[in-house]
Length: 252
Image (cartoon, rainbow, N blue to C red; front, side):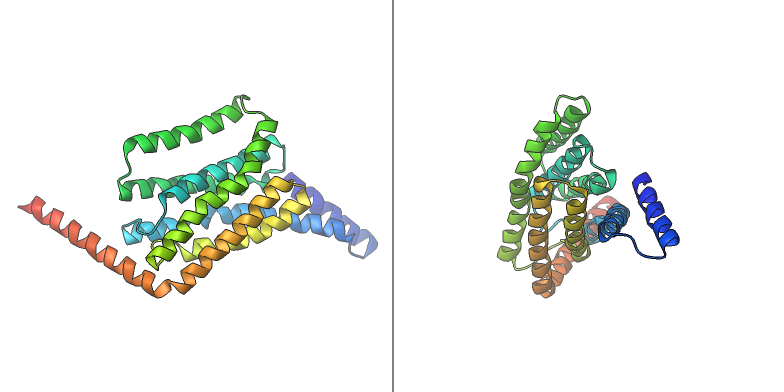
């Protein structure tokens, strides 16, 4: 936040003293910082619509387990890359915030899909090992740069299964339209802020690829919206009947 306050102070001082706007480059820096912190604030609720959709539907129908597992990994890599590269927190902080929310979604998907305990432990252990490795200094700056370089491929692997699953099912299941739309807007903003902050080619490629994939998912949500509503309604009805049957057995 100190960087934003400092830049704002410089801009205001220039305007008051010269009665004119500062250079375009300085204006871009200010806009980039403002957008960066706006993204941080927005990240706190980005995944909330997806969490609510899953909870209200009572199912993880149509959601790719692999997508959320790999996406959580890519978010952690993005956050740790920014941390090790000593970039301003406003350029990568939302990745950490989103990773935490994604972990909540992943736990819900695990629960509804009845994922084996060993798989849950293995995936969680991998996340913890990655974070602990960076914090302890066992994973250095260059290694994290290599992880970030590979992140673009991993992002594709995380989303493509969901795209094909949507096509095969003719619906997008419990995938949240609002969260996907926010992801698209966030990628557009991040492309600009990354360019201004000098985030590097690896980070830039990651956001460009994410934009393309999230835009594809958003288009699918729009195209399959009617069939999706029918699928979710059927799943909700089935879940309610099963719940009612269990409660009836308990009363007996």
